[in-house]
Length: 273
Ligand SMILES: [Zn+2]
Image (cartoon, rainbow, N blue to C red; front, side):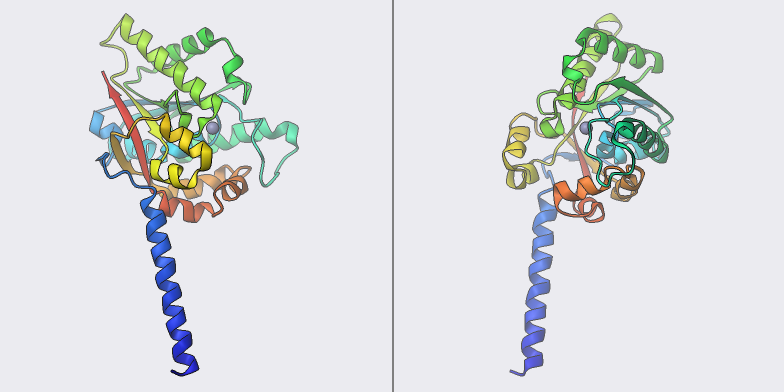
C-alpha cells in the first residue's frame, strides 16, 4: 500500500465514523412511538393558540408549532412569558447585568414577531422565583388571558418535569393546567379544548443528559404527538436571543446550527377534553 492509499483509507474510515456518530446522535432526538402530524394546531383544529411560558427563549422549543399554526392552519397565536429572564446567564454579555431583563424582554418580543406570534405579554414575575409567588394570583392571571383571547389550544410545560426540571417551568405549567381546569369547570364550551405539553427528547436526556436528564425523563409522560420543529427558525431565533446564543453552545457543546439539525422535531403530550 502506498502512503496515499493509507491516507485515503484512514480518511474514508474517519468519514464513516463521523457519519455513524451523526446518525446515532440524530436518533437520540427521535420518539418513534409518537403519532406524526404536520401540525399540532392543525391536527386539533385549533384556531386560537396560547403559549404560556416562564422565560424569554422558552418559545424556541415550540417554534415549529407556532409557525405552522399560523402558516398552515390560519390560527392566531399568542404568548405569555411570565418573567423577563433577568436571572439568566448572558453569554456573550451584551449589556450591563442589571439591564439583562430589559434586553431579554426585547429579545423575546423580537423572536415572537419572527415566529409570527400575533400578540405577546411579558409579565414581571421574578426570574427564578416564580414558585414563591402567590399561586392563586398567577392562576387567575393566566385564566383571565385564556378567557380574553378565547384560546382553544394551550401550550405549556408538563408540571412535574418542566422540560428541564427548572422550577419556574414547573410552576408556570402547574398554574396553566389549573387555569384551564377552572375554566372547564365554569364553562366547558368556552374553555380550551386541549393542552399540548412540550416534552424533552427522552432518549437524548436519558443517555446524554446526566442525572438531570434522567430526572426529567422519569417525570414526564411518553409523547403522544411529534411534528416538524422548523429548525431553521430556531437557528435564526438564537440570533434574536443574542444574549443566550453562546450559553446554548456551552450547555450542549455544539452550535445552534448543529443542534437544530439533529433536534429537528417537537414532541408533545396532548391532553384533549
Ligand atoms: Zn426557561
